[in-house]
Length: 309
Ligand code: FAD
Picture 1 (cartoon, rainbow, N blue to C red):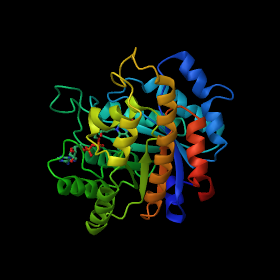
Picture 2 (cartoon, rainbow, N blue to C red; picture 1 turned 180 degrees about the vertical axis):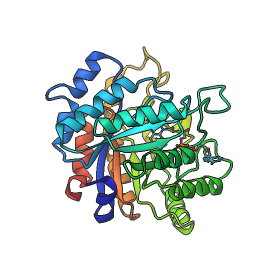
Picture 3 (cartoon, rainbow, N blue to C red; picture 1 turned 135 degrees about the horizontal axis):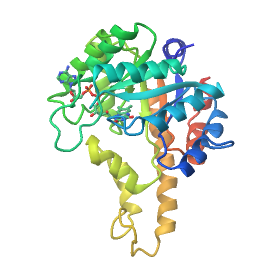
Picture 4 (tube, protein in one colour; picture 1 turned 180 degrees about the horizontal axis):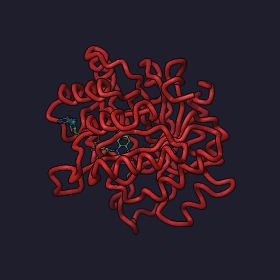
């Protein structure tokens, strides 16, 4: 069964992990009793693994996905970017995934490194990547594409971004995985707007658990320009670590307590956000597991995600 088939019949529930840089990290994620083994106990429909733009971590990405495939507990989905790659290179890499039984992908352009004005490869946008994959591989891949409820940070307008999303559908994409979005009014507006534009693809919503102040600020502002609702800003402010959450040696005497109280408030916030998303009629929840288990499992359980299956 493919993720598309699942999304046609019911809501999906999935995780995202990233390829660790070190052998210790790989063991923690992929070793016996490691994070992947623990995540399987929650019965996700699929687990996706991120891909370093330009293929920087392709070896570890494939290793993680091969393990998920071999374990046979859920569908492995690879993220894949076209920046810095030729058509031949893309074909070769995608064939390697297929040869290893990995036939689900999230087709992305990838973030342009600072100072770049183009992708430095044969393809320039995710729309082209989707078209190329369908041309070369027919229906062998189930293809997810990114959707940005607030508009991609570089888009000239939300309308243009939605038109390109429609083009991804027209070129053969199967479903949407959304960019982080905490602004629920904006999300509802976008959902109505894409449906009005004739985009019928199921929407699988990406959720980053709020567990750490610095990571939350970083994720919102380093690339994506996400709006932070007042409630989330208050959680950050009430637990602010002085001089700032990025400081390696803060002078704040209450660091441990503040981290714990931020995490508690963040988990509750994340669960309420999932409730709101589910009330919008979305098709799936995709939790960024951040290569962790305990906090993510608590969120999945308390948000009622385990009952979707
Ligand atoms: P595109 O859809 O190509 O859009 C890029 C920009 O170009 C947008 O502003 C869009 O409006 C515009 N545009 C699109 N098509 C056209 C066109 N035909 N003509 C003119 N303009 C156009 N990055 C990674 O490196 N690795 C990952 O593993 C990864 N995982 C991600 C997972 C999710 C769920 C999401 C949402 C993003 C992920 N990213 C990842 C980030 C992603 O690569 C960046 O957001 C990137 O900047 C844009 O990718 P895209 O596929 O949305 O690009």
